[in-house]
Length: 222
Image (cartoon, rainbow, N blue to C red; front, top):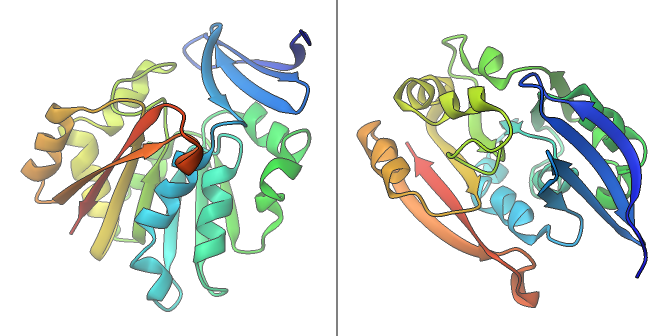
């Protein structure tokens, strides 16, 4: 069996170890030795974008926020469905993840960071959301495996009542919030409804028609 090759290491603000590894043509990002994402399972990340942007793609000059860069698959799919006059803001907490996407991982998603529509913001996504302005037509969150924080405990604040109120205030009328999750979460669905979102839940295979684990995409519409 081909061994895994260590390509990069970083530490989250919580002090967790994050690594980028490769085995053959497969890349994997791990957090404290646990699988966080793999280049072999990108279908549900792509579905997150197509579902979230079904309205924004028809607008003039839409503005979309992608929270969590990962391996660039959600961003690539977002760019593929949005018009040429769109703006896509990408919030990524880890500078190393941005560096990996500009380098070793870039070709996997056809180098989406080089698209002129993209504005990359390195830091806490809450700083972008917590400004009181209704700026975005869609907010896509693929942060920490969903509402149950996995690598960064502060990320849980995006999904509690205060976080959802902050996200709602950042959306324009008719805006959409879409959240990728590794699991179902009924309490999170209830919180979305409490904040006056019309809620949909989609179950998507990690490799779409090719199968793989079943992931959940929560959608809240204003």
